[in-house]
Length: 254
Ligand SMILES: Nc1nc2c(ncn2[C@@H]2O[C@H](COP(=O)(O)OP(=O)(O)O)[C@@H](O)[C@H]2O)c(=O)[nH]1
Ligand SMILES: [Mg+2]
Image (tube, rainbow, N blue to C red; front, top):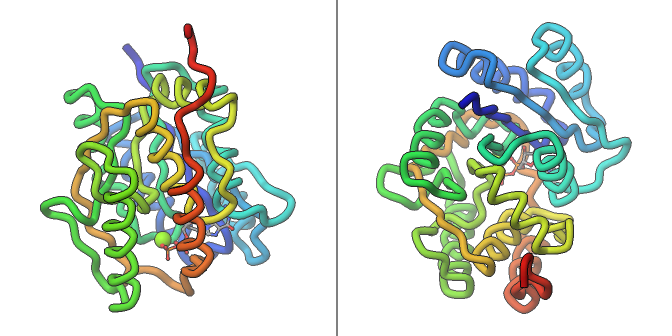
């Protein structure tokens, strides 16, 4: 069977990072050939991100992008990516999402996809907290924060085999994604901000998910420019999710 592997990247003001990342992704072409596609959601960037995307998409037909006319936040950008994937892909295809800031190395994608299919999983998470994973170049305060988020999410959502709830680097089996979105009434994400990554997993956990983790070496030392994450808003978002995420009301076939 010919699977499609679609890389989906949310991007906001990544002019300094995204070309380097797209060059790395291009080297995956030798492994995946025509099965590989890239879709970027340019979320109202005010820098030259779009100019870079224009250049790459005219040079490589497998690279495409969607523009949000204004900045709608990471949650809405992820929503655009998920909706694109379930509309355009078949059950056996895979969506791989990660940051566009060149800190997530695409070279582990073949191993993540192998793991997804060999272990018959719904989601594979590139994890900083599984054996072999680590964070390079992250400030002490960000390390403390991400560990705090891990402990909180594990306590509240406790999904089997999941330690890294906040990292956006994941491979999703499209069949599962379709089921998840359908069961939540056509839209799985209500978060606008960075807590959207936790929302997807928390809801996946509520309908039953087979998840696995592959070690991620976060290369934060390669990032140019500041993080766009608002720590306070994200923590508040996690609290809201802990209180609000429920099993979907209407189940298919029930
Ligand atoms: N679409 C969209 N993406 C965003 C927004 N803010 C950040 N991002 C993207 O989300 C990803 C995570 O942001 P990043 O600054 O790397 O956060 P950090 O890695 O946690 O420091 C990157 O790919 C950003 O370009 C936003 O408002 N909209
Ligand atoms: Mg990042």
